[in-house]
Length: 237
Image 1 (cartoon, one colour):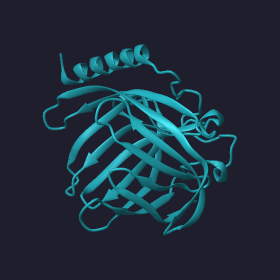
Image 2 (spheres, rainbow, N blue to C red):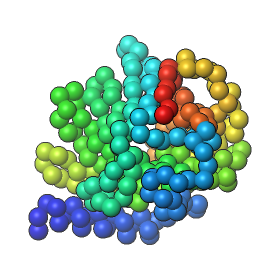
Image 3 (tube, rainbow, N blue to C red):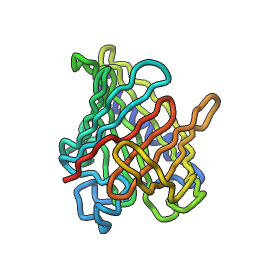
Image 4 (cartoon, one colour):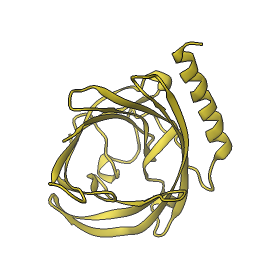
């Protein structure tokens, strides 16, 4: 069996595992328009208004070391490729001090989900390639999941291929999301906003929580977790 066949077989297994595991309120990711536009809500109402040319720049403060800059840009709307061929999503490139990531994020009209992510070092050498089955939640905009104190479980399978060895690792993941504040005031270098404050906690021993502030018509303006990220500027077409 070739490496490609092995990868496909493992991905098929992951799909079956994800369907079998489920959650108490799993996130639906198949009800949209494949990120091709046509969503009824205008961009000014979306918590992450993806569009080609949109960009966000963040000041990143790690627990130790100097402050860094991270910049994300939506480059294209295209086929995700690999085992996700046929899925259309936005390609988002994020530049960091230690390299870059390229992710493919689909707008389903009620959520933004990530299908695939690649990590590169400073020399543009591919370090990892991850595919998420059925997808990994970025932000959920269904009314029930924007209400104060709402909580739900997102389950997915992460399929990671080592670009050097070709080894494939399959990991089942569960993450608990909670609306901490449906109208939180937050101030960052880019300004003062009213945001939806979300907490994401991985299920399992030793998992740490992350908190995200999303603003309608802007996107993510702040993140707390292993480091602090604060929006400094953004540009939306």
